Length: 383
Image (cartoon, rainbow, N blue to C red):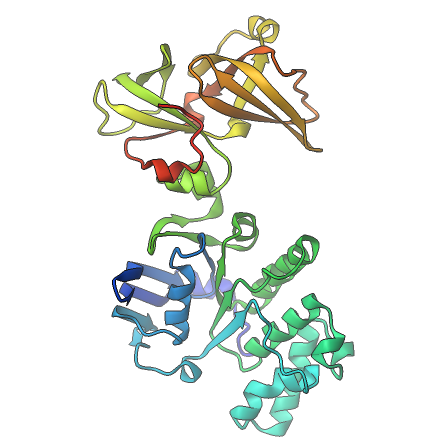
């Protein structure tokens, strides 16, 4: 395929630019002033809950929706007035939308037929696609004779057969069961690596976004509130919403008491140095469950608190064994619920009712000076 390119040659080259993009439906703002550069050859995922604006943004890029204002550029050329079939963009939906009366081969060939591609070239491209999605032996079957995963592979092949520069995917695996979804996620990653095509993928599944993407754009209320690699967004969320949305989090309400210090339920804590914090200011601290430890009183006596670490007393409410890991739910003396996670191999010999000390390193916890209660999902801290 001509779409196969050396990804190293395209690194950091901007292919798509969204500039101050807006979409309004009457008084409702679905997309609110989004600006974003998409690199050539990257796998970028739009992640967000229903109604966050991710699918509307994808639809505007595909040409199915017209922006209320703003610009969509590919290689610096505006697409706003270019119809979908002339955008050199492939599209895969959650519903496969295959033609039931056509064979797998003819379904894949359909985009070439409407473009009146030479018959020999048509056969060459379809054969290449069948091999790429590993459906050579299913070429003459009808969609009804295929599994859900096989039908989705046909849909992907059909979107790729005319060699678009950009492939858009809107919740393409949402209707599949967990094991099949994970298998196809692995196939998509390998497909992207082989082709070097630019993929923009929409999902509400944070685990799927982490497994697939080189970068993730997190949407909320029509805006992008977080953008970066899955690792960076998880380890250092830019705000409390991203911290809550991507992975599990413990949230603690603190009060700043000085440079790098704060109080929580009467306990002095060390916190990351964060610009703009004034003494007495209310803060929100976030620590991931796997970054915290729950130690019995005896364990804590044998392991003195290291410099730069914090600890608060709590009582165990529940311990769950989850195979490779265990989670321990606790509540602090002031009523703040927290969760601690550890590998089962390290063990947490605790039971409901035990008194523990919860510890974490100041460098492992993020501090936020601004947040909304809705950002925190189900807040673990009480006012």
